[in-house]
Length: 156
Image (cartoon, rainbow, N blue to C red; front, side, top):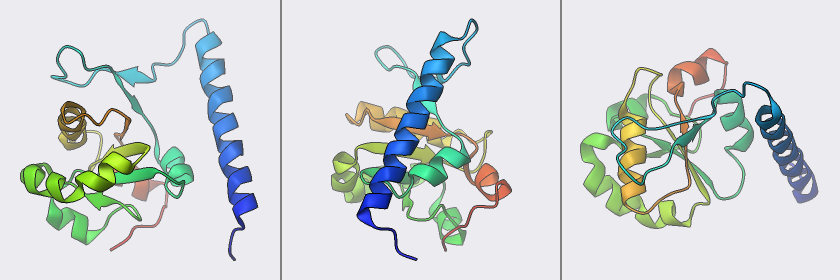
């Protein structure tokens, strides 16, 4: 079943409205939920980076201008990844970044992930990308573990 552009636009508008409503409600709470956190070792001048969950990623992954970026090793990427994700492994950052830089700079938003909440690769990748001038970043800290746990499909 193909989605018409009209329906895709309506779904995107609905998702944006729901996100805005949720953020607004959180803002008005007496004790709001922490949505942003500073990256370890971020240093001066680098703000907190927002975090998202698997359901948010599933809703947004097909939206125009959003790129999913896998910080895991190339071998892990080949075994399975979020559908449509690009590989930017920390072990080969310089070469991989050079190859992907045009796509990364054209994106409106980069969602970075690695294996799970204990993996430090996606926060480190965020730090490196920030210092390269890419500022529109979100972290998906649950990574592949949360993605698979929610029953979402993977690409091989």
